[in-house]
Length: 188
Image (cartoon, rainbow, N blue to C red; front, side):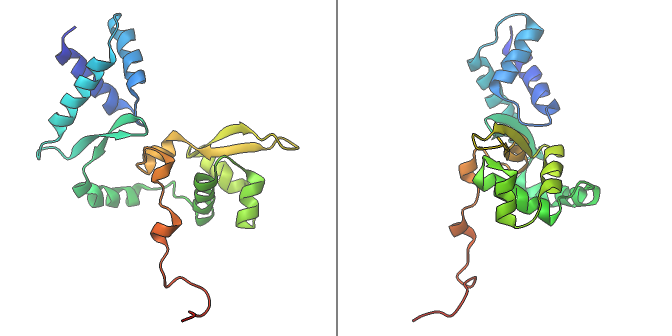
């Protein structure tokens, strides 16, 4: 099968995918369409070709490796323009409570709703439900504690949305803490 034909099919798959698409998903789709085995090296060769194709100054988008998959994204120099559109279209904004809940889940996952509520100090039923609806979090399973509460963790959509390959890329407190954010007097 000609590599140019594979290139176009892979480009179409990546373009049509709402989330990042893995190499394994690409291979499964191509094998089903072509009825013959496509190997990983062919996929990586196509990905390199597509990256190069969209790397030119004539393109406002680029192919990016995210969350162990590939997705087309707008180049950084156009983020502000796209952001303005998103601000106007955004009807699914997260409340402050939902953002707090999402941050707790991201840093402490897997975590139960009771643990989230102990950290926040308020009921988090609504926030957890909204995050599940938006598919930013998912159910991990059940804890091995009495009552077997549900465990929550961030989803792959969360990883895509925040442009992360893995959770170690989340900002650490030491990266965002400022010396002026201290309580009490400075001892000299």
